[in-house]
Image 1 (tube, helix red, strand yellow):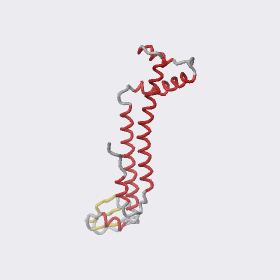
Image 2 (cartoon, helix red, strand yellow):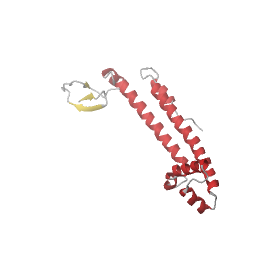
Image 3 (tube, one colour):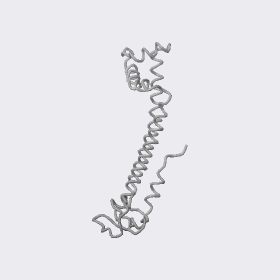
Image 4 (cartoon, one colour):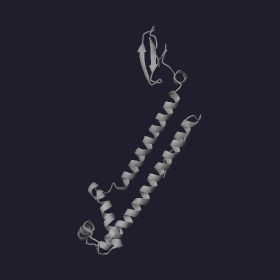
Length: 169
C-alpha cells in the first residue's frame, strides 16, 4: 500500500502500490513526514503559516470578545441595549437642561434620583466603559498589527507569531 498526498500535503489517501500520481499529487510508500511534505509541496510552508496566523488571530479575537463581554456581564441585555440612548439623553441634558429625557426620567423616577444626578452617573459609567473597552480593543488591534507585520518567509516566523500574546494581568 502507498499513500497519495494532494492539496499541498493537506489531503492523504491510501492507494495501490502501482498507482500513478496525477498533477498535484505525490505518492510515498509510507506516511510522509512534515519535512518530506514540505519538500514535495513547495507552497505548503507558506500556506501553513498563513493558516497559523489566521488561527492565532481568531484566538486573539475570541479572547477580546470574552474580555469585552465581561464588561457588561452584570447587566441584562435589554439594559445594555439602552446604554446608547442613556448616553445620548445625558449628553443632551448636559447641553440643554430642558432637553427631553424620557428614558433617563423614567429610570431616575424609579430609582428616586434626580435626572441630573442620573445623567452624571451615566456619563461616569460610559467613560469608565470607554476606557476599559478601548484598552481591550487597542490591545487586540496591536496584536493584529503585529501578526500581519510578520514576514512569513522569516526562519523564526512561527516563534514570532507565538510571541504575540495577550498581556498577563
